[in-house]
Image 1 (tube, protein in one colour):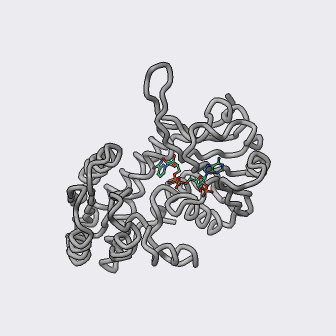
Image 2 (cartoon, rainbow, N blue to C red):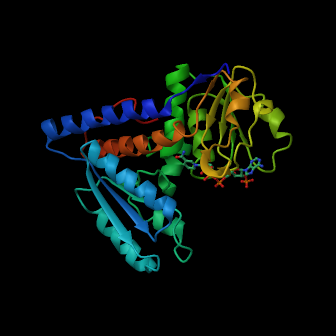
Length: 296
Ligand code: NAP
């Protein structure tokens, strides 16, 4: 193996420590405490785990944390009423509705009911538009975490060829916008892309957000490229359930210059960026300068 391992777990711990220091400063200098409300509808096991860990880390950095757990059959009007109440709650600066929502709820309608200034997931149509036009926005947490690691590893990304495999609204598209914002030449690949391996081999930066276990092998990687693995897939290996990425780690690490592992890469950065976004939202809501280096 020749690639440098980009340690997302350690990076995320540094980001959380930085956020905690700002939270302490806001309390001391401005008598303010950033607050995050997480709304979970139903009891999807993976969502339960995410929500629990978000709440724990929110408290650890000194923020106000609120969890709303609603039954799976919650009527849409009830969920919208909760969001309306959180939108005007002065103690809450960030609102996150855990996805996926049960089938009877219209996710777009629900997400677009969140005040864009409190939309710490960055999924509201206003934030999508602001990001796309290069204006100040709330940036989706997972792509923001990837961008932070790339900036940290490379310094400037200007002029690099980036290929993002995946075009979802939550990862692929915003990732591509962020890389474009940092002056990369960006290609977005997807399930209809012809000769995907050849497209990927043109990448100095290869971001895999596909949702297919270990699909990206060494043949897809240009020697020396930086590989960011967004994927989280649970697979059975030797009778045990294991977490693997969209990247075949061993095979890619021989060719790549740098690579994120799974677990311990992009995953921990996502929650760290959620906390960073909540801090940023709190500063903006109160007309304070936002901390540098914690958003795009
Ligand atoms: P998604 O909505 O299912 O999108 C997957 C994308 O991959 C689609 O654009 C799809 O193309 C493309 N794709 C599927 N099969 C392909 C193939 N054979 N060749 C090329 N492209 C292919 O997934 P997502 O929500 O973006 O998530 C992607 C992965 O990231 C998942 O493993 C997810 O668990 C993980 N994730 C991790 C975090 C984190 O915190 N680390 C956060 C979010 C997601 P089409 O559009 O053509 O169908």
